[in-house]
Length: 405
Image (cartoon, rainbow, N blue to C red; front, side):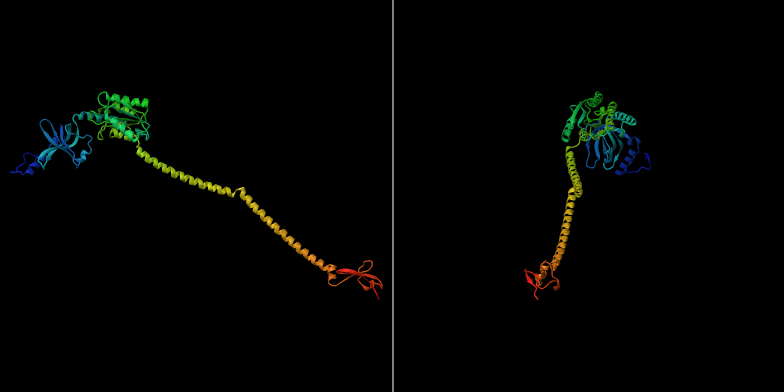
C-alpha cells in the first residue's frame, strides 16, 4: 500500500492508535524496510516456551529490538548468542502495543557469513549437479563393525566423546585414529590425507569424520571441495558428525550418512550392546522353540517309521506263522483225536459184535457145544450113534458123555 504524506484534510487531533497505525503503514509501505539486512551485536537473547526468539541488535550508537516467530525459528541452522556479531534479515514495522519499531527477522547468520554462504551454495549446487549427493551412490553402514577409523583432531573433546560412546555401546570394536587439523588452512589437505591413509592402510569397516561445533568459519574446512571429493572417492563408508545439530556442511551431503554431532556419529556406527543382548535373548528363545519344534517333528517321524518297521518286522511274521502253526497243530490234534474216537467207537462196535458172536458168550447164556470124538461139531442127532462118546463144552469147562438108548 502506498501512503500519501500529504493527505487532506489532516485531522486536527490524532489519537495514539491513529498515529501509531499511520507510522506502521509508513514502515510497511517502504520497500527498503521490508527486505533489509541489519548487522550488529546480539544482546538479551531469549527463547521462551512459546518458541519465539526475542533479542536486541546493537552497535556502538544505537539498538533495535528483534523478534523471530516460532515457525521461522525452527528452520534456522544458526542460533545466535549474546555478544555475537550477526546479520539479521527481515522487515521493519511498528509494534503498536508499545509504540516501538522493531525488526521482524526471518533469517540470522554470523557476520561475514554472506560471502562464505554464497560460496557454500555455489559449491553445493555444482557438486549436486555432478551427482555426488545422489542417494543411490551412498553405501550401507555395516551393522557390526570390527574396526572403526576416526578422522579428527587428537586433542578435540569430540574425540573423547566418541571414544566413550564406542566403549559404552560396543566395547568389542577396535578404533584407529588418523589425526588431522580440523580448522585452518591446513585442515582440508590433512582431512583428505587422513581419509586416504585409513582406506589404503588400515581398511576399517567404517570411517567417522568429526569435529565439535563452531562458527561457519570454524567449520569451513568441511566445505572444501577437496574434502568433499575425498569422501566421495573413499572405498570405505563414511559417517560425518560435524558441529551441532543445526550445522550442515558440504561433507555432510557427500557422506554416506550424516550425524548431527560427533557423539551421534559414534552411535550410528555401532549397535548398542543392550539391544544386542535383547536381540540375542530373542534369538535364543526362537532357537529353543525351533529346536523343540524340529525335535517334535523328528520324534513323530521316528515313531511313525518305528511303527511301520514294526508292522513289517519278521518277528511279526514269525509270531503270525507260529500262531498259524499252533492253530494247525491244534486242528491236527483235534482231527487225530476225532479219528481215534471214531476208530475207538468202531472198535467198540466190532468188539460188541464179536462178543455177540463169541461162542463162549453163547455158552455163558446156558448153551453148550457138542462135538464127536473126531472134534466135529454135532449139529444133528443123526450124526450120533448109540454108544458114541461125545464131548460137551460149557462156559466154565467141558466133559464127556456117551449116547444111550
